[in-house]
Image (cartoon, rainbow, N blue to C red; front, side, top):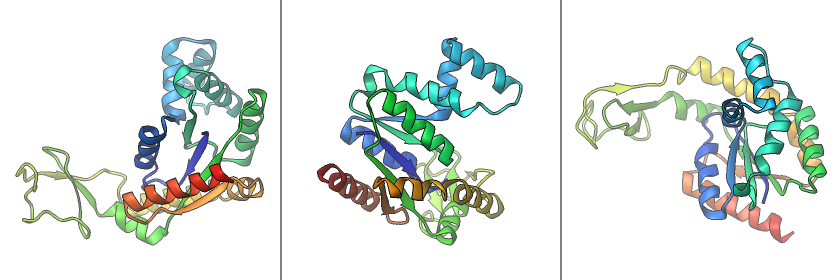
Amino acid sequence: MNIILLGPPGAGKGTQAKRLEDRRGLVQLSTGDMLRAEVKSGSDLGERARGLMEAGQLVPDELVIGIIANRIDAPDCKNGFILDGFPRTVAQAEALDAMLAQKAMGLDAVVEMKVNDAALTERIVGRFTCAGCGEGYHETFKRPVKDGVCDKCGGTEFTRRKDDNEETVKSRLQAYHEQTAPILPYYADRGLLLEVDGMADIDEVTRQIDAVLEDAAAG
């Protein structure tokens, strides 16, 4: 099964992609990871990408598509793949479709993890982590039993990600909606777009994804 996961930063795409990998034998494909691996391999595509990246330029769509094409030919992708973070534009979606068609392949589903922006902002901005053991907490939803003391290791030092602030989160959400909005009708028109509640708890989102994928496979 070949799947695209769509959802803004903080929606939990990485968690759900990992669960799909484990349950369905799929491979999560991150364009960033694939680019770095291609550069490290020293391939022609990798060398072209390296030159552009070192010059501070964006890697063009056709090069990214070429790298994805190479990656999905690997044996570990025989059961299918999960694309996370690509495509981001209709042009990229069309180029991806054309490449897959050349391989006599296609997409089976595009899963959109729908979110409430205000609630997602609260979810992200309130996060903090124990500096000692990495245990995650939240100002509203999961505070330590004893304020200032980690439940897991007893540590008293906590950290926050620098980009977990309201201004940055709102900016990233706006960018996601602007980039993704045109893609949704593109896939909806082809009967591929499936929606789940990205604001539900992790297990419920997993259940919903399983349900819509089963329906897609049956239909």
